[in-house]
Image (cartoon, rainbow over all chains, first blue to last red; front, side, top):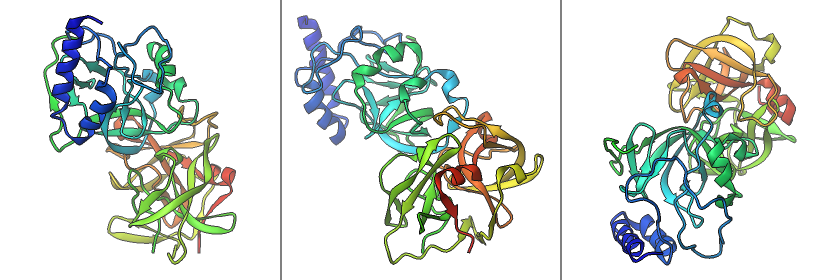
Length: 186
Length: 183
């Protein structure tokens, strides 16, 4: 890890400290030795990873990236109609989750490293710890069958064993915890 | 008193129904595992499936709560007095549903053979009920689908921006051994 990356990671942690209690918890787990690596510009792909290696789930890993698993478009042509109002978090494996649930996000969703938040397919930005309203549900197993190709290669690292929500639509919560920002770097 | 049409955290209650001789409540199986809250009462999942013809979970309700065979549809109440199996439903007929997000809406049954991809090894026994207006949106899952005072299924999903309601037919109840209360 370069000194530049270390500085970047420190800055990210400072920014996260403003998000609130949820983010504070994440800082303890995610910033203690784990860096948010990646380019200094917004990430192009919807998912990112470290070549598919399985992370050590017992402790934060170094040089890990934020993983966003996304759905195959055909998987959400018929959508489940449950509603989840949860916060966007990064779990101990570096995977972007929906509150207590594992999360398969709609196509086009990705982690914006510059903004340090989840960029939705319509360009809206949900900061770490921000709440969303997500339509979908917990599909019948195996949940990995609903992933697009790149996400299938990365699913193992998330190591989810509980409910995993397949989302067809996600909107920022109406309380203003997220913001719509014009997307120029995708 | 608990009954169909009430809401859980993220879905809608379907019907008062019996499983293994015990009356409880149903909602959709894809609404997540674990206990749910209905009118500040915690209910516990025990039966059901998200497999083949089924997208339903049966919940045990604590003693002391009555479970009449009724559903609420916004401002009105209906007592469920019968059930109609899938192949007895009329293509082109009008069927209605209640869900906590879109309320009470009706549409036309255009197919009885949908097989949603989110159901493991789905049987083509789900219903497609179409409307010119929004018929179903997130939060409606599990809600009752009816014809008059007859139960015909429960809300499962949607397509076409919500203009198509996807409903589990009574086949799903039959498969899982859950029987909708009609008295």
